[in-house]
Amino acid sequence: MELTTTPNLEGRRITRYCGVVAGEAVLGANLFKDMFASIRDIVGGRSGTYEKELRRARQIALDELADQARELGANAVVGIDLDYEVLREKNGMLMVSASGTAVVVA
Image (cartoon, rainbow, N blue to C red):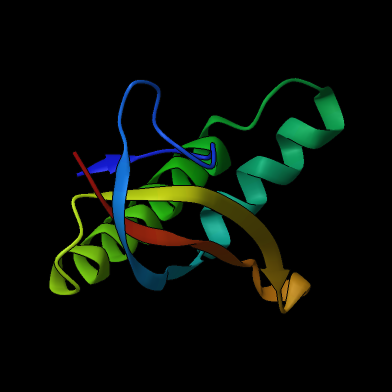
């Protein structure tokens, strides 16, 4: 399955549009992760814990999107848009959503 944010794939021709597909992931961070991330925010630097969770959530959303595309008979998804949201800010819920157009390319 080829996934891209661009509207087409270089050197490939779209032969059929299968429809819009989407994938979502909502992950929660636990109290200890939040506490250590807060300390990191105070002293400066990057929060490796949250970066890891963001990558994991993004991969889950893209995997769901690809699964939906396969169910429609597609072999690629073009025009992918990724969105990130913080839900219930005090509880550390993170949502990543991915959407795009499932297509068949030759």
